[in-house]
Length: 308
Ligand code: FUB
Image 1 (cartoon, rainbow, N blue to C red):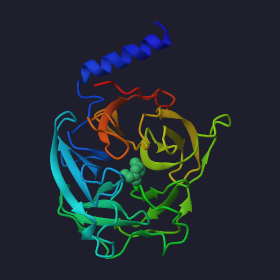
Image 2 (cartoon, rainbow, N blue to C red; image 1 turned 90 degrees about the vertical axis):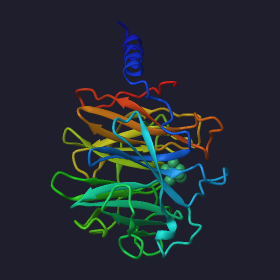
Image 3 (cartoon, rainbow, N blue to C red; image 1 turned 60 degrees about the vertical axis):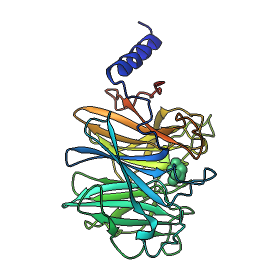
Image 4 (cartoon, helix red, strand yellow; image 1 turned 120 degrees about the horizontal axis):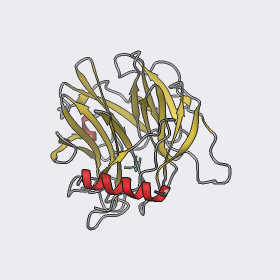
């Protein structure tokens, strides 16, 4: 069997085994997936593209979906608005979120208005969430080295209990979080990525950072820009430096992409957004899921989206 034959065979197997792969998880427009497995159920937090102007990502609330099996998704609705953050302008845009669980509480990291990241807390994954601090966790105007656009938070709680927050466009930022998950611990650092292919100037950090750990190795995936390829880098240390390893998902016909990876019961799934729903486009995105496979050396096989 040729390498192409193996790849095509794998894709056919994946599609046959998982009829839902590649298809939008909802008939509503949503982008920026943040999937989690909480309390025996999958939860998917997302940017609300259904209620934006259609000309920009300017919705002011976030939506949550849940599923027992990744295939059948329940729309749990609009569960949090920027108005929960009293320090935010009521029309501040609500962008790509992140969530985390610790000590019986659910934490929701919410980029608000493109220049601040808020954190909300709840006893339940579907809310209600309340502002955990009364001010922003990250504030471009207040915090040294927060970068030009502190958005797109991703959180990793390491095996030793240390939590890390990464975020940002164009220059990725990383900062430790205290055990309470609502305060930073130490300075915001630039996250260093080395080894981008010198023959491809498009290979650079753009946005959509996502942290995960697999077989003891730290993975930092991200979008290269606008439009974005989803690529990844790895490190033996959470703070880096990270070494570029390759492409996870090639360019799609859409101005942004934003990925997240969830691993459960020995399987890995890539969540991303595309424009496949009728009427879909740059500001009308839809979230889809594909299986993701590692090689023994820790590299990730490029995912080829399955046409639904
Ligand atoms: O949803 C608005 C922005 O689009 C997100 O913050 C980026 O990651 C991009 O997907």
